[in-house]
Picture 1 (tube, rainbow, N blue to C red):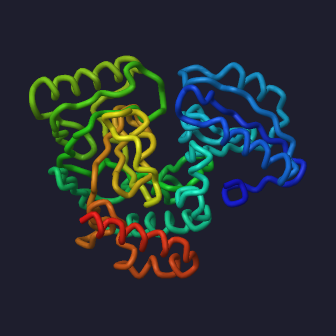
Picture 2 (cartoon, one colour):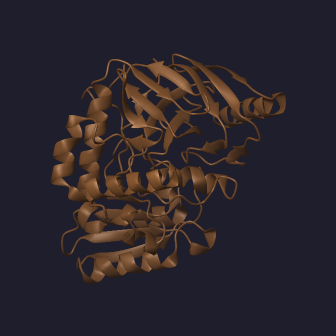
Length: 352
């Protein structure tokens, strides 16, 4: 993880910010092993701090540590590290946000595919999307949204991406939704984007609700009245808390890593499900409620098909790496990726 994602030279100063294992997101063994590796293998100077639950105010223990101004890197084994992921970089230590939440995950394909392989895969997907003329997003449950890639891009010619280093690098760069129109079918429920904290952070949905979107703006929610009204009320409440425009679809991105852990199920823990499965190609992730990335409410579209000028880059939640010539150098350079996609394709065929 550390060798692939960041460069920590001998003698560098590292702060490991973690949340307690009793919260159910990060296990204690992962924290202990990361600290041990930094000290013994990288010969870094390591300190650690427990940061607690995400909040809408800075973590006092973390801020106290940062006042020392001696750290080169912060490694976040805590959800707190994801909150400011789209903020512009400021002076201070660089940040690594870790999505392998259990030590055992480091031995899985989610933790062992090299970071630079995932970054190369991400670039191919980003380039294919940005070079398309028309993008169509559909799903088996009735989603159909059509638009163009990134009409409003930064001065560098790229979409705004996160400013922290993510391990694994497992999602594409967000695509502006400002030109997209159609409908998105919401099934399991609404979840928080993890940007700000509010209660409850999610809204289970018993029956399908359809969001009608025109050029990146939600026109209405349709469905069984009890569920549709619950969705409307949730948007009004969250927008009211933060003084933001509720009916905005800011952007979307696609999961890249077929090795994403498929648990938990949404009915078991909707928040953990949403914040785990967003890295999987089986889901397409929308940022909504607030005219900024990542907004405050996310939509998860299951088994998406993403067509670029009529060609499927994703088909029912699977990246079509063999159907685009642009992937060949990436797969040749990183045989781990080819094996990963072949094994997942075989597993899907066996299930079907």
